[in-house]
Length: 267
Image (cartoon, rainbow, N blue to C red; front, side, top):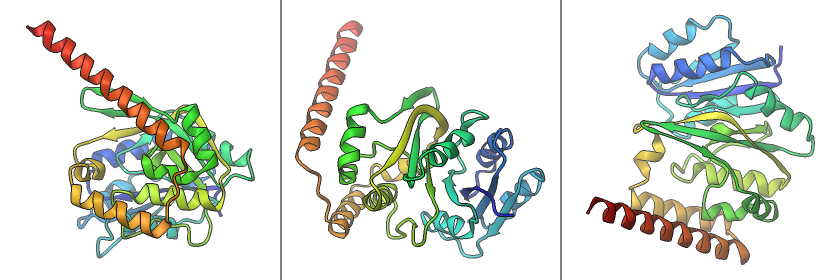
């Protein structure tokens, strides 16, 4: 039977991370879902793990030729049968047993919205911090989704849920800005979105994640910025760039003061 929501998991090795993700799905108190695992792993380790979760309605696909990111994401969406798409990277997991229900309710209770997202908790080695859109950023985003070109105020695709529609896929030419490009396109089509400050997802800050691999690749970032600007003809508006500049100038100033203070304390 067709399910309300498809939890789409693009997998590649890292069995322990996927196990954590699947365990968090297993305890959800919302049950009208299917899990779609699109697997780029050359071995059977992910397949063997998935077979152990007999209580989950899982659609499993092993890609003979690895699709990479975001091709693997798109394949999971293509295989999905649900009305809603809930992307979950295999190294992320639901924060609470009610997380999926809250995601679904955001769209169920707002039929005019195609897109919704939550706050999250980023967790890594010796670190844990809340990631959430600020109220002023939300106002800017409501008026003009193009401001995402200045920075990702929404977060990883794991914090989002959206209605499945024709040709709603990620751009296979992108790696670094793949989520930004997707968010801008989907919000240009319908600016009405829903968000919550509840932390519904935990985001794993692992050294192996794509973001950490790309962050120091200036050539990649530059090329993708140019590609997205030319492709979408971004129009940032006037007020947000000023806010963006002031905010980060203040943050940089505070960080410098704290570093000076720590330096003098050591002396």
